[in-house]
Image (cartoon, rainbow, N blue to C red):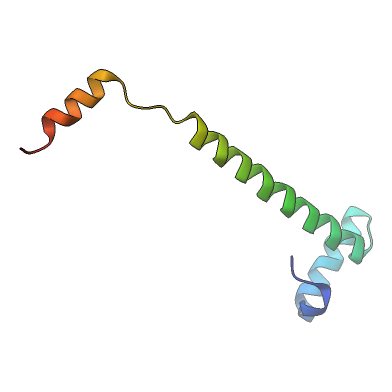
Length: 72
């Protein structure tokens, strides 16, 4: 999330409205929003790392079939 100084007036008004709806101040809302974005990025990176770790080597038959389909 960009710093509050880089928000345009329209963006700032929108975020202020969302903060009021959530019962927070604008600064607290922006900090909360930034924290959530960081947690989401960490969770996605973790799941991507686990997906790479759990990728298995193809079985014997799959490798033989792949080899049979390759040109000589």
